[in-house]
Amino acid sequence: MLWGIFLLALFLPTLYYNNYLKNEILLETQTRAARELSLIKDLMLREKEFEGPGQLHDWLAKVSGPLQVRITYADEGGRIIADSDVPFDQVSGLDNVARRPEITEAYGDSMGSSLRTARVSDSNLLYVAQRIEGRGKIPGGVLRVAIPLSNIFYALRNVAILQRLIILVGFIAFALTSLGLMVSTSRSVSLLSEAAESIGQGNVKALVQFHPDHYFYPLAKSIRENAERVDSYIKTIMEQKSQLESILDGIEEGLLLLDSTGRIDSSNRAARKMFTSVPELKGRRPLEVIRSPELQTACNRVLENEIHSYHSEVTIGADRYYHVHIIRIEQQKDDYGAIIALHDISELKRLEKVRRDFVANASHELRTPLTSIKGYTEVLMSDESDPDVRSSCLEVIFKNTNLIIKIVNDLLQLAKVEDYNTIMDIRPVRPEDGLMEAWKACTPAAAQRGVSLENDLMPEGPLVMADFDQLVQVFRNLLENAVRYSSPGGKVEVFSSVENDRVTIGVSDSGPGIPKHDQQRIFERFFRVERYRGKESGSTGLGLAICRHIVRSHGGAIWVESPRKDMSSGSTFFFTLPASETLQVSPHMS
Ligand code: ADP
Image (cartoon, rainbow, N blue to C red; front, side):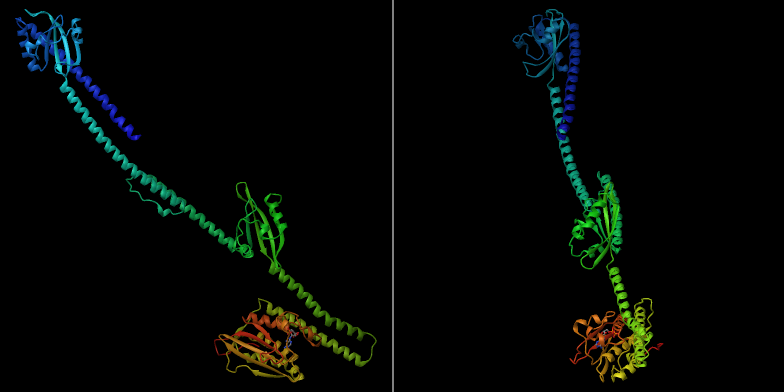
């Protein structure tokens, strides 16, 4: 198409120019012929009178030579009398020219002209003719001049050939240039479109570098600049997104973002941790994740703008409790979603239960001795005067009062060790020092029951990192139990071992042991093994709970083995403490 237009654009002016040139040349030739005709006519009229056609013929031949024209003389009837280009003897054989257009015109007293192919020479000639009066023996007639156009036409044809050649060369040059241009343009366009595609996929570096002279340079430059700008916007957005995600992931509350259709659009890490059993939260309805129809209804109502927000508590599974808050949010213009915020209150609930149980247990533990004191006090207040009864009443009241004091003391002790604000004085201490200090307090009871202590603690063993008073407390609780439950005349053995950076201390007794199913529970507050309940006087069920708390706060562990390792009856309480790196005992306040 383009090439067709180009060809037309080249050909049409050439065609027009050729025609114009031809017409101009003809006009010029015609003028020249007319001028030469007038000149010849003039010359002829000035010439002496011709004696006959032969003389005229010679004269015409002489004049035509330098002018390079053919001169014909015809009489009024169109018969040729003389012709410069035809031998005189053949002139009479020439055709009558009376009907030739230029002759007919000349008869009308004007100058006639015509362009034709000559019958004689078969070449293009321009004829001009004019009437002329007779001279001597030559009758009046028409003088005609013929100028050959072959040379001019030949030159014109050459010009046309040259023009065509130029057009062809121009066309080939144009075709080659435009082809090159097309190839380079389409290459550049495909490079640009590939680059644009890569940019679309986020690879800004994929941009093509064009030379500054390249016609696509401004376009490529502006694409590059725009891509870099978009890239920097995207980076900012991504940074903000990841910041937001980190903030959301850092929030301890589980967050579920619902889209306007009520399906989960995104969630934070806490929410994903809450619902690990659900493989993919995205796209699910809240009911599929939290099996609570009330919550689903609340979400629907919030999304439908029936209510703006919703607060409630939901239970997931057996022991997970959440405080739920749903609020409606505008995600985009006129597109509302909702956020479900789940706050895990399971620990709070557990602590609440522990507190309730604790109060109930403590009240129960205190009520028993108090009821007993009340009963015996009533007996004393009655008119009973038997001194034996009075003294046994007072004895019971005294025992129960002591028990109450012990319970209160243990509770205070437990509160103290559980208090995170209590400052522990941890330093390297010798376990034996703690043991001896504790045994002092147990000696009266031990002596009463005939129970002895066997100290097998490693004499050269490492020191332990502990708060001395708390270590004494642990030993004391374990020794008191061991003495209390040992059979009369029994033995309490205390031994130790060391492994890596831990020291393990064991306290063994020859008592009745502890049933397997109670071995975990004896460390709970107020727990007592059922079968000894009646026999235990002064038992509060708090001693081992205190021990466990102290040992754990030192980074150690406590457990019981019953029957003992050697399968003999009784139980062994073990606890571990971190070994000290120094061998030097630090002085402590006791
Ligand atoms: P208590 O003040 O009753 O001793 P503890 O917390 O020290 O409270 O002990 C909890 C319970 O564990 C005891 O009531 C007892 O039933 C059981 N127990 C503790 N030590 C021993 C032991 N050495 N032998 C047998 N039973 C024990």
